[in-house]
Amino acid sequence: MIRYYGEIKKGKQPTESIEMITFFNYLKTNHPDIAKVATHIRNEGKRSAAQTQKQKIEGMVKGASDIFIHGCPSFCCELKTHSRASKPSKEQIQYLESVDELGGFACVARGYVGAIEALKDWINEQSR
Image 1 (cartoon, rainbow, N blue to C red):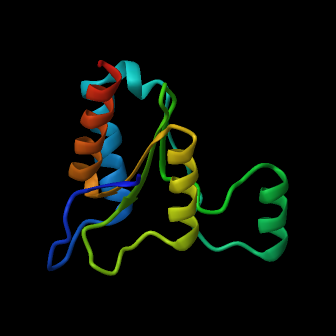
Image 2: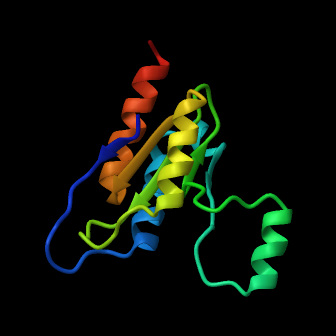
């Protein structure tokens, strides 16, 4: 099951980059132990066909989630802005479904607040 956190908001919203920076700053300040194993997968952006082929050979997976935290279970979060137009791609959904099938914590979060809510749920589930 892919979990969804956060909400769609009207008006101008912060960029995904700003939301990501805010989330990782929160993580470093409030959960430094977790921050040591948290990674932002830079999987976005335009590439030439040759660059794409090389990255696939090197292990890059199309649709890989933005935020990955090692643990048992792993935490995989696709971060989106609050905009209605910001939606996970088909490949991102398929990636998260695969994470879930393997027992990981798979989620889509709108903004850093949604990502923090997801993180708190993941932490609470680990402590049970």
